[in-house]
Image (cartoon, rainbow over all chains, first blue to last red; front, side, top):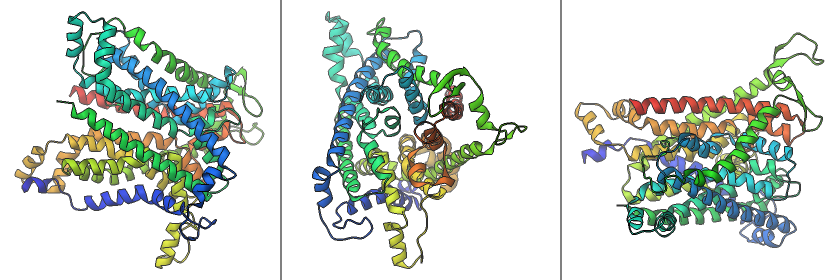
Length: 269
Length: 306
């Protein structure tokens, strides 16, 4: 009883509720208004799905669908590349002993997290312009792979640290080559970490607005840049419907990664 | 994330000798697409501007001169300090600082509350706080704009309840930007503090209570020093992105709440079109952030040694 008391501070529960209200109120309000029948965003005209129909068939739908497709392609490719690179880096950092430049490499992997986003955006724009590269979604993809690496690395490295190397040692005692030990032993054990790494990189890529807006070529849009362009002319109900759909996608992804993370943790001793 | 020790604790040597081969992709990608661009940006800040974007390859200090010195309309007066851009930077620093403090005031009790639930409720609460972090930042900022604009639901509710008799006029003010920053980065504060509180040993609180320390004394003298690394990590995760934020000041603020992010963006995407100046402003921003991170890293090493 006494211990329970030590954990309690008066008012902390109220603040937690306030925190949740602050985090959810704007999203909830937009979700509710996306079902508004009225064309005005201010007045409530009853429940309808009109704006969702508009998102898929309305006059602006081809623009947003193309942008969504670009976003998806970039996020999948950037997520995959970043995951591959990060997995390889994690093996080097946690399974290859000491080597020269290890600390510098660690700093390099985390560099995209430390440089402010707007600085990365400016630097990338200058770089791509200087080398004269402006190929469709290519610039966006390269920039996304770069800043997704640390996000993919975090869960992968964390997982690798928690997997003892005795299984691989045993395999190599039985004459497995290092490549076989990696492919047949370490990789399967790493899968939960690799999958959460990919999901994190995927979401981070999907989320990015600033860097994309700087490096994208003329006429190429991702979903965030298309939404930003539209919002600059005022918030319209179809934007609220798109926002609510994206909110739904995010919720599905968090739940998914949470379930995977839990299945990964369950195996820990 | 920055708290992780270089290389981690594991010293496995299974794939010894393959490190450079395994790290080659990382070095190439981050080197070519981040290090080289940043170096190029540093160079651009010392070049001459070309009309409407781009640069002329000729050394010049004009960008930094324009940032710090006011030489009058025709550039022939004795130089005075130029306050325009320093004011914008200063505003960004205090907005980011205030957002950090607000996030801490709300985030610490929230993290504490969540970490002291039983295992099942803890996961539920944690999920509740994490979901907004995964939602697109642009969409969250737009939602905030929708909520607080003059004709928006917040004002409608307050007007209806009779608490106010005219809209608050929040939009396009510093306060709106502050609200946006606070709302954007609040989860960044909760998560690292939660991780620290979760590892907190309550025997310490018991010992303090046995020595007649009250609840708040225990918080101040025992709990806060122990979970300090989590608090500092949270503060950095809020302060650094707030400082260079673009979406919150751009969508929620007006001319009087202009911040660094918008100033830089305007040089490349907007009407200003002065690349060396934009590069110089970005360099100054990066320097401030690197100083903050260095101070943090040094305090970490000092703590690790102690």
